[in-house]
Image (cartoon, rainbow, N blue to C red; front, side, top):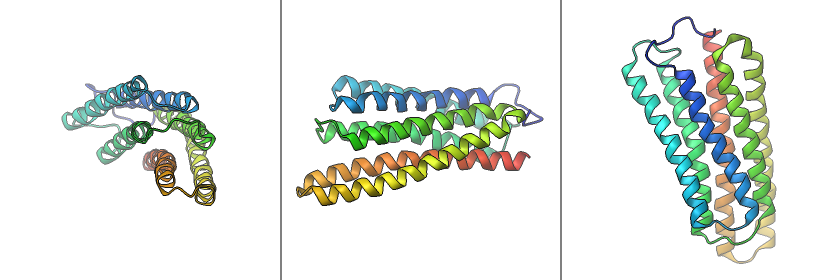
Length: 208
């Protein structure tokens, strides 16, 4: 196992795996709804429900952290990992809410591309977190973290290309502002995924 001692009253690995499931659900749902071109009240309600469920798990982890004397790894790392996974879900919810507020009623192929990359990155995050239970999984965890970093670089390139196209092809300032916000938020999700990967890598180094 990665760690010699485990808290008897709380399995943090199980809670992290449960939490990241909601991040995966949020990313998959985002990938499904973006090609539809319009965010309905039902769509918004569904993504908010996923966010709420993820929040509940995050609150449980923090509550157990406050109650547990012996933790499987550093308390600050448990807290940081919890917050960053929660931020993934929050950011996806924010993008969907922004699409609704901005009354976006068109299929945007650039956002569809972003949604696909986000889904792939969150899937890699989930693989990294689920592999933390066992030392034998260390190579696979490291590989998943590398994939998250690669996809973040892909996101940076996409953002720069897409924003350049936006500024060159649109003259309406309101349209530019709307899509600039959305694209930057989409790239931020990939940044947060990379933050999770960095935390997981740090935990592995400390426990090696």
